[in-house]
Image 1 (cartoon, rainbow, N blue to C red):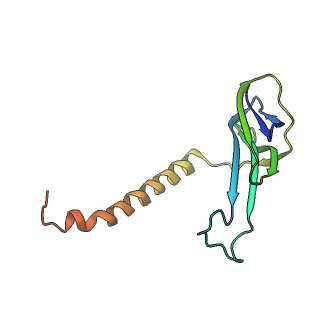
Image 2: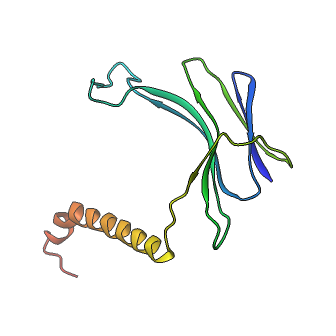
Image 3: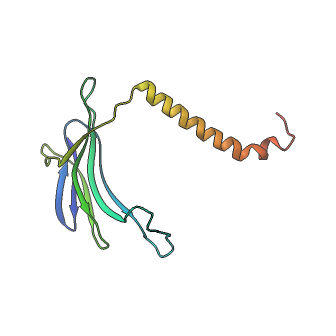
Length: 138
């Protein structure tokens, strides 16, 4: 299987992978007042700096897929993250599982169609005056 070996500050925290994954990721998220000009108020969500190593299964018809986590760690300034993509027969056990939301092919097609419609509509209204207001009918 293809897996991710993840180190935090030189220490291995996990080797993540299973034989039934279609998505595998290691992500660092920094949220909050990250710069001197950032507007951050008490109403905003709390600051959060974290490393997450997770994935999504793709088990096929009739089998429930899951979101899987191998690591969730807090981060601070100065931390170093190293991610290595490797092929292995062994990985660490996940720390959590949660059901993946199922959508049908039709629902996926409708969602993509709607996204394309909204994209095209926004460009149409942004460019309408430029091209329709010139009197140059085609």
